[in-house]
Image 1 (tube, rainbow, N blue to C red):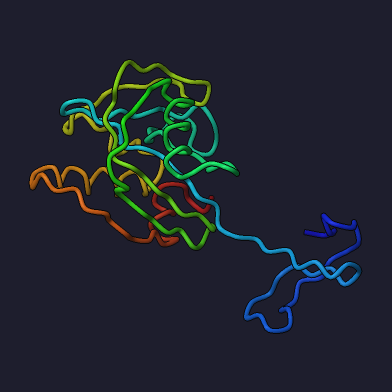
Image 2 (image 1 turned 90 degrees about the vertical axis):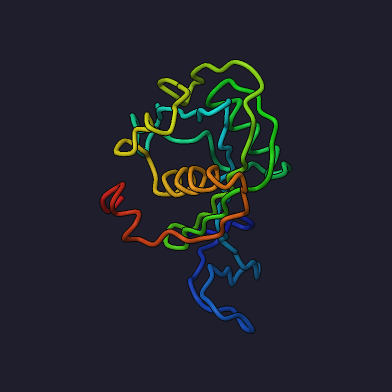
Length: 185
């Protein structure tokens, strides 16, 4: 950030008085510009014994498989964001169950919130998906998954399905885990 979005003057990067971390500060108008993590909300859509996955039509990781998920918008709940993203990416309607995975990615300032969901109708590729398909566990394209958050969510699901218990899983992805998927990107 070079300029203040409030007044247009230049900003400096420093620790504000009474704070514990650097922020962009505008000395002209006094605005402190807070930059906070982005929430990615999505679903784990289940139909019988199959999981719905989307092949990404956009970067990053174009051509790789993912669960329908994306950035939360202002003025919506996490549940609304998850169902909206499922509708946008897979043209699918779902009935949400519980929040299933909460995954922190502090090195890229993201938090993933994935809800278990029941697919309630048909599906089709939306504008951000090349294709959408249902997969049995043994058909999951493990080597073609877009992100470690997706692999982690799927592995939790298949382990929990054996027990018929689906608790909330809270974890974090570190840079080394992410490196496996996207190189240094």
